[in-house]
Image 1 (cartoon, rainbow, N blue to C red):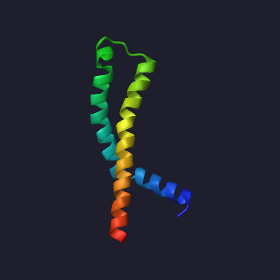
Image 2: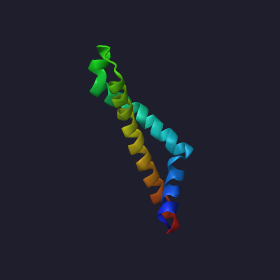
Image 3: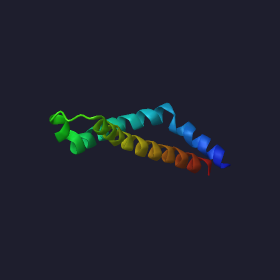
Image 4: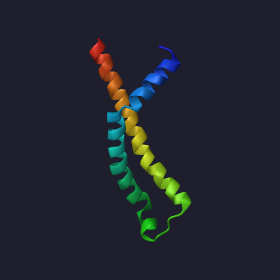
Length: 84
């Protein structure tokens, strides 16, 4: 399998409905908790700048990416185990 085929295969798995929905759920839950921990005091004071909003978006994106990586890895591992 070439690098391009591997990348295409990975992207295909990462954009499957089940993977995207799972990652969104984790991102909303974990991202909300992290946002409150990291930015809660500033949000309560009304200190909502563009820089802070960018940091909040990145805070939510991290669990999305981690969940997507883990889900794709689990799907690939399951496929490898089944094909043996």
